[in-house]
Image (cartoon, rainbow, N blue to C red; front, side, top):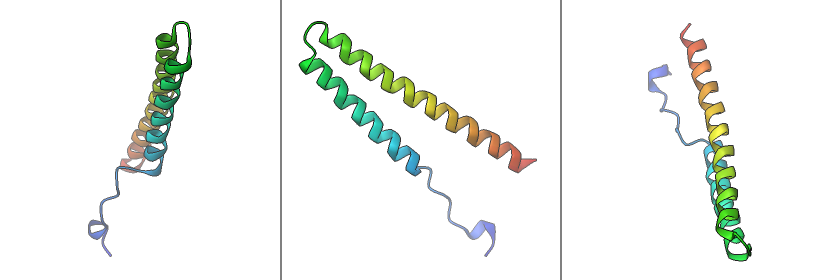
Amino acid sequence: MNPSDEPAPSRFRPAHWIMVGLLLWGGYLAMGAVWFGGTLAVWRGLIVFVCTLAFLGFWWLALAVRERRLRAEDES
């Protein structure tokens, strides 16, 4: 089998599904902080969701840098 005959790999990997799950979980926790937070509930929910986004952004960036580095190694 030639490399050109192989199907293209899916761009949506298991790590992406985990990221989507974490995003949903962070949204769920943020909504809970708003609904049951008491004083300054909206700010608490916003902080929870921003922390979730920051974590996922850092993880995505790490995966992108790793993929770019591996691609550069394959080309050389």
